[in-house]
Amino acid sequence: MVICGQNFDFSVLNANDLDRFEDAQEKMQARNAAQTERFHRGGIRLGDHVRTQTRIAMDCIDEILGAGASARLGLDENNMAPVYDVLEELGNAFAAEKQSYINRASQPMNREQRRAQAKKGKHHPPVSYPAPPAARMVERVDNAARRKQLLAELAALENG
Image (cartoon, rainbow, N blue to C red):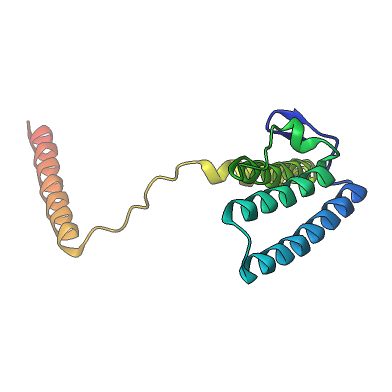
């Protein structure tokens, strides 16, 4: 799996990797809760609190991706933003890897399904609705006038 341009030996589809991921996440949540409680009791400076939270997240990343992963990614306990970026990219990589296998696993379509899929994208011309009654009356008058004209021409040809 590629995270921030670095290749790591981790797969969402490997049960051992997922166990390691869940263990690391549970451990991180427990450490976070304990640290937050200590912070709320007081006596801890805000900067120290952020450093501790960052270290906890970096330890989690190391447990998931392997020892030294946070160092390879250039993470530093003094800046939490890159850690959030790595965690977000880790989530995106999980989703992308899972989706790539879901797409592969979809069943091939038979001829009927392919034809139905092809028809979906085709443009269908608008349906023509019957003309309103007034327009039909005009058509009848026009047809009658044309019939009279043709009969007159035919009579002229016969008499002529």
